[in-house]
Image (cartoon, rainbow, N blue to C red; front, side, top):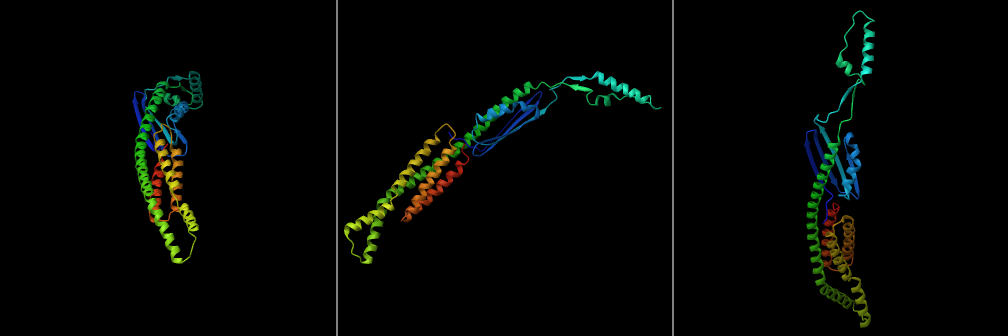
Length: 288
């Protein structure tokens, strides 16, 4: 099973303490490039998040973000810094004694003074645990989407491979007639030149010319590469790089076929092969 590197997943959870939402996007890339955006209070999860994603996603540019909207249910204990408050009140009394219109101390303004109210750390353990569980579900959705897209890519590749097999088989069946046509053409040109040539030497030259134009090896290698691609598509592992290499090999054989061409049939087959290979190569850029 092959996986596409292009995918998107989003999961959200609403609880009494607020709302969590994971969002993961992935695009094609040569290797795994993971970027995270987490709220400050979720920073302790960064290592876990990277491990969970890397264990399921092996290639691609992955952008992962978490949003947290607290509802107020996650509360903290508020403590009054009594010594500081007493000192501040004492200072206010001293200031009141320095002028004729003393004022009163506003409790709210006093509470807003830095350090007067001290808060403990909120208990985020349930929220962190829920965030990890929700991440797993989001990654599951991402991988499932990559698998569905990968299946579509696989079907397209198999269609192109079938077309390559047909082109190779058709050309192979035409080779005897093409060789005979080429032989007849060479003999006719020699006859037009009105040159007496030794039959043995003429036969040797014909064999050399036909050998230079022989494409049996290229057709054999094309079929071998097609078979290898089919086998790779059935592997249960990342195969994108292997497939990309095989596309290079297929394209090399198609180019060699075109360079040896001495007939329109061979040239046409070479061009159609390169079109099919390029279509596969474009899709394989998205395969993990």
